[in-house]
Amino acid sequence: MDGGADPDRRAELLRRGAEMDGVELVEYEPRQPPGSKREARSRRLVIVLWLLAGVFGVVAAGVFVFWPWRYVFPGEEGHLLYVLYTPLLGLFLGLAVAAVSVALILHVKLLLPKETAVQERHQPGASTEEDRATATATAMDTAAQVGLGSRRAVGRRSAVGKAMGLGAGVLGTSGAVIGLGGFVENPWDAQGPRADRMDTLWHSGWYPYNDEKVYLRTETADPEEVVLVRPGDVAPGSQIAVFPFRESDRGNTKKLKEALKRADNPATLYRLRPEAPVQHRPDRAGMNYGDYYAFSRVCTHLGCAVNLYEKQINRAYCPCHQSQFDLNRHAVPTFGPAARPLPQLPIAVDDEGFFHALGDFTEPVGPSFWELPSS
Ligand code: FES
Image 1 (cartoon, helix red, strand yellow):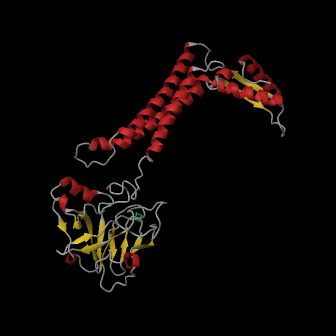
Image 2: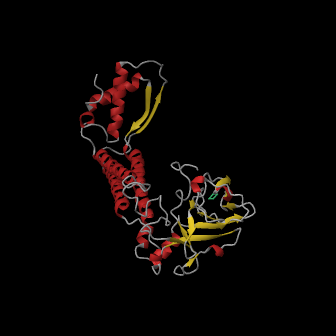
Image 3: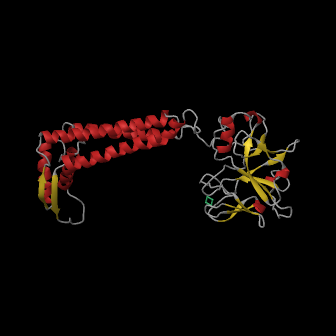
């Protein structure tokens, strides 16, 4: 028994199904006179909203793909465009979702019939063939009401249904573009063809390239004033914040500023007291210079600056959520929410007496996430 091909047959089955199921249709009437101007207006409004959802989705995908998203320093050309990237992405995605929501609400409020039905509870057990046919008719009628269903099943597919399909399809495609876009380049690929690039997330500004020495410098009010660090600059039981410096950057304000501002660059140079009971790790041999140890200044919990140091017990503290790192054990966390040690920066002193880095941090800097081991 066919329950969906012919609309008249479907309507009859719908009524019969309701009666057989003991359903009393207390109310079932169109919200607006069928074929009236009001109904046509409502349909047009819903169609426009679905099409707008698709347009906003396409614009969001366009922003995602084409808008300049790389960081630009304040005051430099392109900073405003960079700042607008995330708000624009959010704005157009939000507008697309809002258009879909309003379209669905208006569809129900303006186009679907008002219906109130009362039905007795069924006895448990398998449905008869007739039950299944009437249930199919009910489902097909619902699909027809919202403008969905195949041409054969509900006759001519309505313009609202086409607009809904188009808007939802375009919006879904845009969402897929944005979702898959993150896989086009793997920011964690430090081994593959991008290994020599400076913007993989495994690298910080301490990453060595071109065989150029990377010195430890302190920060002053003037980014162009380069103050390199010597062993005598740090008293026993104290610490200073240090940043990477390359001679090739001297005089280049942009590069010098970048080195000071890049989020994963800050490190702390600790000079432990001579009697500190450091438990050396074989895999960290040669990374310290006597009592001098350098670790990332970025907390492995949520990224605050680990800028407090208790010299009596050789612990570094993060003031945000009180994580403590034991410097006698290569900065393993001993208290608080941080789950992994501060990455260590291997350091040495050159022939002229200046500190320089022997390589990048031992691990990626910053908050932990599921891909990182706790070591
Ligand atoms: S950010 Fe350092 S303890 Fe939370």
